[in-house]
Length: 238
Image (cartoon, rainbow, N blue to C red; front, top):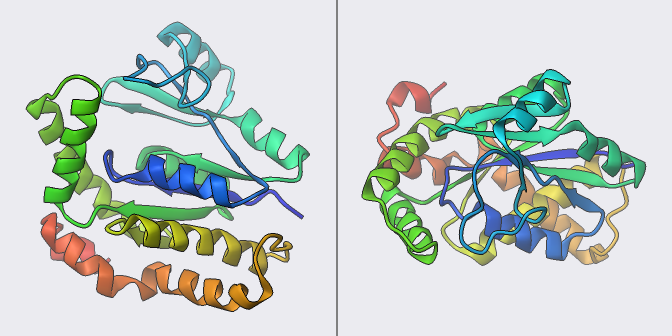
């Protein structure tokens, strides 16, 4: 049996795309939904790889035809996940991974409450700002205004952490990749799927690692991150 829907969200610059790419190289039977967007490609991005790039009238037509599982407006650009991605994954006996922001994740959870939701946090705003600047530099331009706007948005998005089942802090890439792999293996195991490619001796270790990433068990790692972003105490204790 397949068809598990995994949602992964993170503030821009948290290293989510790198994590997703690493996960896809390690885990079989996991399709990735390439989102649609009205924004232009950045740097070395290619159509059909990072996004399907369409104009606004095309995107809005797809919205009106109810072709999206979720859609959101992010900094004036539209993003959406086509329903067909999930249909195709299920037809092939695969699970599906969605890389979407907190707006889209809320829509998907409402429609598909059995989806597995994972939130990736940067360790602190200083490291996030550094990553954003490095990415901007690689794309050929650095806009301090854009970086500050993304940092402010990151703080708001982090306040939504309690809506996710699993929380990862991406401070050490190799560790975060292993945790993400563990979450997928654990959910497959608990839903009766085979864990092909996972050595018998590793499954217990992965189950324990995934359990430590469950929101309720990860607070010791989460609280310092929340404090560094100035997340109010009320948001931390909800």
